[in-house]
Structure formats: structure tokens, C-alpha cells
Amino acid sequence: MTAASTTQTRTIRILDTTLRDGEQTPGVSLTTDDKIEIAQQLSKLGVDIIEAGFPSSSEGEKRVVRDIAKLGLTSEICALSRAKRSDIDAALDCDVDLIHVFIPTSPVQMKYAVNLTPEQVLESAVDSIEYVKKHGVKCEFSPMDATRSELPFIKQICQAAQTAGMDSLNVPDTVGIMIPKTTTQLIAELKTVVSVPLSIHCHDDFGLAVANSLAAVEAGASQIHTAVNGLGERAGNAALEEVVTTLHVVYQYKTNINTRLLYNTSRLVSSLTGIQVQANKAIVGENAFAHESGIHTRGVTEQPLTFEPINPELVGRTRKLVAGKLAGTRGIQATLTEIGINPTEEQLNEIVKRVKDLGDKGKLVTDADLLALTSAVMGEVIGEQKIVDLCDLAVITGIKVIPTASVRLTLDGKEYIASETGVGPVDAVLKAISKLTNNLEKIRISEYRLEAITGGSNAVAEVIIKVEDEKGNIISARAAREDIVMASVEAMINGINKCLLKNRSTKQETKP
Ligand code: KIV
Ligand code: ZN
Image (tube, rainbow, N blue to C red; front, top):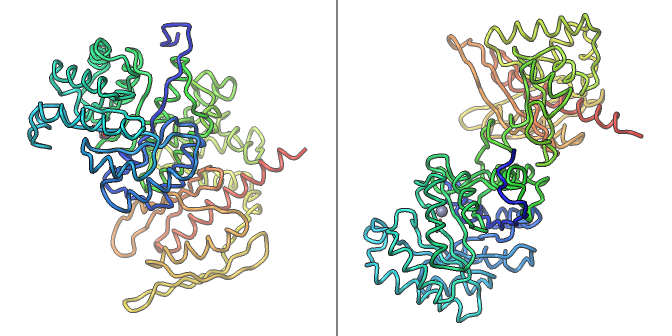
């Protein structure tokens, strides 16, 4: 059963605010180049409107919005503006298609955020909308904190905004206090006083931003404000990838989004903003299409629909079977087959036993562990398949010395040397390794964790590394040693070998 209540297919518009509300995520600051790259990707993805920034906030911000507007993207470009002529002038200077004018309408924000009376708020809203329209630009109006505003006042200001010429009305749930039922009720109330298209802007303070956005659509809203990976002020905005996939799959509505680009878009935004996506995040999290337990892996290898609501390819992903203590024989076999390793039934049973033993000891079974176990069981067969091998390594560090590392590696049996500097010895040595292995394939570290250090100064350090290839495939590897530099090097080389091995076996399989 789906949530679609009518057979008529609706198309819902997406206004993406990753570059504006998303950039307000604490700790995020994007350069002009970053913003342009994200804007190009959002346009390729198919968002209807890109909210590119808030031009009156700084000269730099104004320049970026103008630069994005000049790109000639398919998406319409929008600039945010307070209900002030000077702000609107800054937005007009950027040559955008649409100006999003906002002003607080809740008692608490009118009094403490802008110190205006309701009459002054209404007057500024009307004047600003008229001013935008006088310049021949489209205007979306937001009564900020709409969901904590008094209903008669918000109805009055929305009606006045419509008379002033707004093209669309956006309803911000600024502090995320709505639930689906109250959202539906508010949209229904506003529809009794305005006839322009309605839009919704939900924050995720209670984890309900996506649910509330969809409730607004059920009540008749035709546009949703989203941000990639759910970025935004505090707990963020409604996540673009979740909203869009639910609209397509559950409601069977349309958007103009090419869902197959959702994952790559998420990766790009994560790497440029530095905000990691949690592993269990819907649609784009690392585990969203990963299966470990035996019953699940057996099920999905037989028939993916058993434990997957959608084909991962729909959102640009691939299925991942994870070896762990809950893994079943067929799941582990499928993982090994995928990288071209075919143990006998007897060897497979022994590998599964060892994986489970490791898991029972509370160890995370990484891909590199699985390879090491398999290698041991199958008699070093896999060891011979090492593409990258460490021959030698020297590191210097000190107070007045820039940490520097030199490494000698073999790549496909040939020897190479490289040196690099870094913020510390580990950084330097990992950079030197990447410098060499990038000649084979661009593989970068997407996560580095120093997991467990026990005992005194001779304690064992456990390094867990995730490496990512250009297609976004992520491989994890681990190494434990008393020397942190050596543990890091071993984990990195394990990860790179696994990644290269996997990609080469895939290429082999796809050869005609
Ligand atoms: O959350 C909010 O209220 C906003 C406004 C600027 C629309 O981001
Ligand atoms: Zn917001």
C-alpha cells in the first residue's frame, strides 16, 4: 500500500536551501568555488529553485549569489532578503529570478528579534513585496516562525501579502515544533485566505522535518524547501534526498529531480561542508543499503525486495553485504565472490566460523579482516594479490621540524618512492602513500579513527580507516600495532589494496 490518496500524479517543486540555510549549519563555511560547484550539481540534479544565499549579509555573499545567477543554470536562482528595501536592493543587484522576503510574525520574534509591532511587521511586508514586484522580479513571502504565530494575524498578513503581489507563500516552521497533524491544519487554514502556491520550510528540531513537509503536501502545498543531507540551522532542514525519494516511491508523486544523482550530490556536499553523514541516515548513509545478518543477506541475494524498500540504484547506490558476527554463509560468499574470491564449501565454512569468532570477541569485522581471514584459510592465495606493498618507510618529526615522511612502495611489483610533509607524522606518511597510489587510482581517506589505546606508552593503537574511490565506494580497513604510524600505514595500504582489487575484479567481469 502506498500513501498516495489520488490516482492523479502531482508534481511537487523543490526549493533547495543548502547554500543558504544549509550554510547556516554551525561550523560550515563554503568558499565561492564550493558554492558554485554545489549550485551546478543541484541544477544537474534537477532542483527547481536554488536559494543561493543572503546578499545583504556581506559583500562576499552578494558576489557569490551574483556569480551563481550568472551561470545560466537550469534551476531558477533565489536570494533571501529581510523585509527591508536595502536588503531587497542587494538581492536585486544579483540579478536573481526570485527574491524570498521574510519577516518574523510570532509574538516572541516580533518583540525580541526585530522589536516591531504587528502593524509595523504588516506594513514592512507589504511594502517589501510591492517593492520587489515593482522591479519585475518574482517574490516568495515567508512569515517567519509562522507556526508559533497567532492564526488571525498570520492569516491577515498572508492576505495582505497576496494583495501586495507575492507569487508564492512559504510557511516556515522555524523552530521545528510542528507535527504532521498540526501542519496539515495550518496549511488548510492558510488555503482559505490565499490562492497562490504554498510552500513549506521545516526545521528538524524534533526529527519531524520530512514528515511535516510531506503533511503539508498532503494538505495542498506544492513546494518543499529542502537541504542536502538535512543541513541547516541547529538540527537542520528537511533532507532533500529523503523528501524526494518518499515523494517518488511512497506517494508516487513526481518531482523534477533525477534521483540517481542523489547519492553523489550528498557525497559532494558532505565533502565540501565537512559535515559527515551519519552511517544509518536514510537513503545516503553508508548503511542505508548494507546488510549483515544472515537472514537478511540470504534474502537480498535471492530477492532484493525481501529487505530493501527500493532498488539502491534508484538513488545512485549499490547494495553492500557486510561480514560480521551476524553474517550468514551466503552473505559472506557473496561478498567474496564480488571481489573474485571463490573458496570451496569447506573453506567457506571455516571463514564464516572465524568471522563469527572475531565478532563474538566484540571486534568490528572490517573488509580487510575478512580478506585476512580468507587469506589465512585459503593459504595465502589473497596475499599474492597485493597490488600495493610497503618496502620501507622513514618519518621525521620534532619541535622545529616540519613532519616529513618518505615511503618506498611497490605498485604492481614496481618500486616507487615519494616524500611528503604534513601536520604530523601520520598525516605526512598517509599523504606520501596517496601521492604514489593515486597513479593507479584516485583513492582518498574518508574517515580516520584511532579507536583503542590501552595500557601505558607501549600500548596497542588500533587504527580504523575508510577509503573512498572516485565512484564513492567506501572500504574500511583496520590495523593494530604499538606504533601509531605503522598501524596507520598498514590500515591505509590494506584499504587501498582492497579497493583496487575490487575495482579490478569488477572491470574484469564487465569486459565483453
Ligand atoms: O527557518 C526560517 O524561518 C527561515 C526563514 C528565513 C524562512 O529560514
Ligand atoms: Zn530555516
